Each structure stands twice: as structure tokens, then as C-alpha cells.
Image 1 (tube, rainbow, N blue to C red):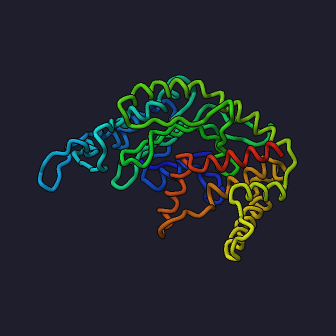
Image 2 (spheres, rainbow, N blue to C red; image 1 turned 90 degrees about the horizontal axis):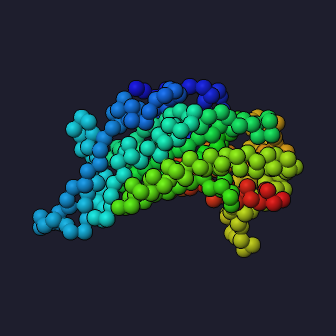
Image 3 (spheres, rainbow, N blue to C red; image 1 turned 45 degrees about the horizontal axis):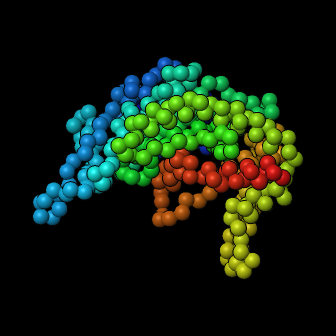
Length: 333
């Protein structure tokens, strides 16, 4: 099975796709829309039905470590990948078990598997799956948003098992996530002895959390009803990246450049034409910058590495606080 791109993401959106499609593109994973495809079947067909074993660690004298072990991925073809050293308290959540959170949603709804794959260095140290949840919603009856659940897991200690509800605005593929006081959208589970129990609890919580999307639509329509423009967008930028009064000329210039870039998105991207002068339009201009245009900090990266880093930070919810704070400011305006 190879990477397949299908509607609605064949439509030109300036080359922008949701985070889970970005992960599939950059990692050789699979993006599909196959009704009735089960996670276990997809893992087998893509050659990702590998298992995690825990090997002993030895010091330079050959003595076995009492405190540490090595995480190893064992693939169907016999290949073994070493993912790193962990404490003995680490209990790996096997790939099918980790992605069973997504399967639970598939079993109890009209959802369908949308993407699945593995990546990382070494390969397989991180895995993910995304499911599309039923029909789209229409914010204000005019702006379509698809509903997804993305599940990610790692064996290199980069992140916990994470399950994230992700509304994707079809006009721009923004992940328009926000957390509301009465409806959470993320569950995280650490690799410990209690992980199996917590997965069962997470599956139950995620089933109940479909109410999140009801809350999301209600709050989005409130934003859509609010007039908003450059003043509100400037306030969002000030909240997200405060600029000290004594900031250097270079820092002040960089701050202004960032604001100008986001304002340009808000003024000019065609996908905001029907919602531009609203809180919902301002919010989506801001999120479009975060998801697709905000630079990845750190060492120099290739275009492919940058795309993967951007997809990873979205899928793991690392931008969610900025999105939630911006939503709160606009809602209160």
C-alpha cells in the first residue's frame, strides 16, 4: 500500500494539507479513505505491524544494568531498530494497543481511518493514526469543518501516547483546535504499568468527548457573529508574542514583520472571503500562520525536515495553547 491523496485535499490550498497528511507525505506513510479499513489491517498491509521488546543494557564492563533497559522495535522481516534507553519502570504500549484508541472510535461510529504511519530516527520510534469522524459541520451554515481524531505514540521518549480531537477547516486545512472549559480535546498517557488501564479510560473518555465538537461549533459560531479586523488581530499577536517596551530595534522590527505577515494573510487569502471581517476570520488567519508559515526554530533543516517538524508540532498539540488563548481573547472582545 502506498501513499494516496484523495478528495478533499486534492483541491489546491497553496500546497497546504492537514498535519496527518503532512506526516504521511514526509514519512512514506499511508493516507487513505477506505471505509471499513481497521487499524490492525492497515498496520499489516503497510508493514508496520512491528512489536516492541525490552532488552537488557550492559555497562562498559559487561555487567547488566539494574536500572535501565533498551527499547527495540522488531519488524516482520526480522529487522531490529534500537530506539533508546529507558528506566525499568517504562512499560511499552504496543503499536496496535496505542492505536486502539482510534479503533474504538471506528467501532462505535461512522468514522473511517484516514491516515496511518511510522517515522522517526530510527524509523518506527514514532507512530500515528488519524480517523475522520462522520460528516463535516458548517460553522454558521457557510464554513465547512471536518472532524478528526489523531493518535500519536513514541518509543524514543519524545512524547506520551497522545489522542487529540482536531477540527480541520477545509478552506485552508487549518487545525482550528481550542480547549473549552467544559469540553477538553486531548488525552495523554505515559508508558507506565498503569498505561493499559489508562488506555481503557481514555477510550471511554474520547467516546464521551464527541461533545467537544458540539462545543466547538457553538463557540465558532459565536466568533463568526463578532465583527473583527486589524485591531483585534494586533491584540492577538501582542498576547502571543509580547513586546517589551525597551525591546531592541531588531526585536521590534522582527515583531512588526510578523504582524505584517499575519495581517497580509488575513487581508488576502481567498479562503477567508466569506468570513474575513469576523472573529472567526481573524482567528483562522492567525492559525494559518501558526500551522503553515511560522518558522521552525533550531538547527538548519531541509525543506522535507521543516515540513515534518511543522506537521509534528501540530499533531502533538504543541500550538494549542496559543490557539486557545487567541480564541479566548477574540471571544471576549
